[in-house]
Image 1 (cartoon, rainbow, N blue to C red):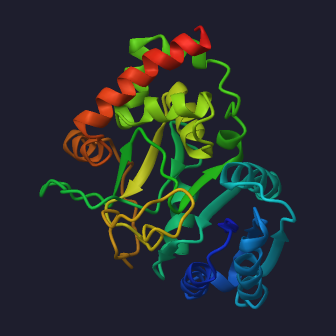
Image 2: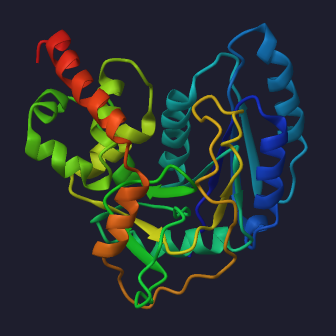
Length: 302
């Protein structure tokens, strides 16, 4: 089995990237793994100090088959950085494992991610793989170690070149989508927060690679495979991140269990209900999003 490379994206958090790389270095298979690090540039003079500290950390990393570091002179932002970085690496290696600078993986992370990428590559209905699972309640009679769910994960994810290259980052079908209740319901199988996020992406309120990746998966009626036990601890919801506020409901532990895939997993209704509940917006937020959809459609003249 050819091992997938790992791509790590970082910006201006030296303490976070240090923890992320220390954990990754401890993984089984790390010494046989190609590591790519993309360091985004500062947005202003104030950030240059933190970015420089990050680059000191990443320049000292050892313990991998190869290490390729790209230091951006300009600030790409997360979406452009990930789209361009993943495209560069996946074109060479045909598959990738991706981390950001606020994820702490377990020692079995690389074994499990490579096992998942190898097993699911020929299964075209799987768009991506996740190392993360929200802290949900699992049915007592559910014995599998993996499950399918119609929403991609941006935490410790992996995919293949054919899936990645199928994404339309310009979202040419958006106008038809936003006016179709059926299409919005299809997308919202992964969570009712998805359609509002895609609309915000379209009107420029956010710049998210993940919601567009998720939309591409939904349009193709594909799934993401999740572990029953998360392989990651998330340390970014401490208020330090550009796109994350202080929040601790993503779990703070990483399972070191080695996954054995004995049979092809399925989507479980009870687990899917738990996942949708995890991503559900509050009633007030849902009302606000409904109003915004009407306003934005009017502004865009759809």
